[in-house]
Image 1: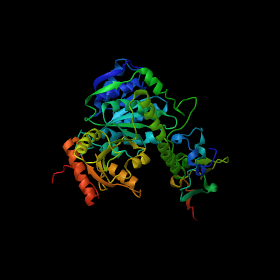
Image 2: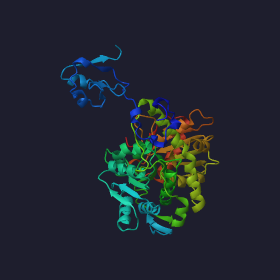
Image 3: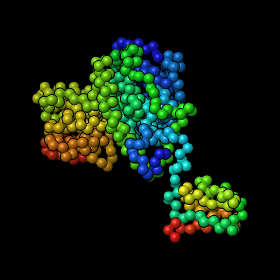
Image 4: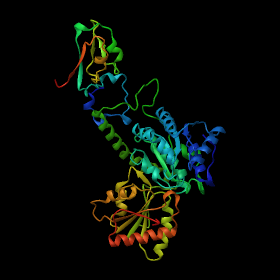
Amino acid sequence: MAKPIDEITWQELGIGAVVTEIGNSVQYKTGSWRSERPVVKKEHCIKCGVCWLFCPDMSIVQTPEGHFTANLEFCKGCGICAKECPVGCITMQGEEA
Amino acid sequence: MSEIGKGRKGIEVSIAMADAVAQADVDVIAAYPITPQTHIVEHLADIVANGELDAEFVPVESEHSAMSVCCGSAAVGARTFTSTSSQGLALMSEIFIIAAAMRLPMVMALANRSLSSPLSIWNDHTDVMMVRDAGWIHFFVENGQEAYDGIFNAFRMSEDPGVMLPVAVNLDGFIMTHMVEPVEYVDGELIKKYLPEFKMKNALHPDNPVSMGCFAMPEIYTEAQMSREVGIKDAYPTIVKAWDEWGALTGRHYKPIETYRTDDADYCIITMGSFGETAMEVADMLREEGEKVGVVKIRLWRPFPMEEFRKSVLGKKYLIVLDRAISFGSQGGPVAMELRSALYGQKDAPVVVNYVAGLAGRDVSRKDFRNIILEGKKKAVSGHTDGFTLYGLRG
């Protein structure tokens, strides 16, 4: 998209809101309604990838060191990763805190 | 192109409509049979099966699927037709709305019939009023010729690159669908001149991929709705032009608002659909008795022709609006509500009296029209104009 989604005017939308540009969903940030975020204690992470497997929104990414962390532009804060982590290294923290 | 020739024929209106669809050289027809639309799609199935029309006829398992097929075929730029009625429209309503929102051109013959319950197969306008706000272009026809002509007009409007909206040709079930009437057919040359090849902008194609019907965040949904609102309002001049050019080619002229003996009328009866023909006859009868009554017929329902409507009635003393549906718990009939809203705050606005009649095919005779017009006038004069009257109600 040439412009961020919250700057596009109705005139700039194509007829029927057809999207003619390919692969722009990565620019469509959907993490804004999260009330809690997952915080990973790297020193306890065993790099098992269970959080990555269970994330329903594919928002867990692997860092170059092999740890797992949440992509906060898409993470909705559901807490499944924290619940499923076998070593309890993920905690949910309030966004306001 | 089908070999259906020109000339005047005595023919069932449904068959004439199906012939028009074939003459318009439609590519895809997807429909599920439902009374009283049945003869339209049955005849099209025959024409395709006989090899008279090179089109895909998709005999789907439900109306929801019918409209889904239509959306798919319109999205690749195929000329698309469907037809339904009442419960069928209710079942397809989810995708019906999406067709307009995604700006997919197609034409539907909507054989207007009452909604269950109680179960009824007969005519009124409860089905079309259910989808009033879906964003389709809706117009009404009131005889066989208009139904036949309306198919060509509708394709022309729908597929215009500046319009790109689905169009419903509304016709009263049974009262029109099953009537044998004289219909003047047009020839292929005229159709070729009138109806250009459909070229869908951004049609689905592997060489030029696009995404349709995407997810929208609150940040963009409002803008998408405005685009639809402007789109249907901007369609208005094209709709008028489609009728004007048809008039020039055939001598049969159609307008968004039709008037009959209104110039010197003190008051008017307002109808939509097949009520209009009886209304004109009764107006003639009442004129002979000295009643200065005229008839205003709403042909184009969406986009509503606000200015033309106002022009046709401002300065009249009162309007008697005849509806064929009730918006339960409101002022009454959807047409009267629309007109009251269009007139509110206008200088020289007439008083509106609303009647609802002809529900589920109950006959409304010339005598009934006469009663409605004269009673309605009395109500207007005495100021009893709130709400509506259910004409012929027992108890």
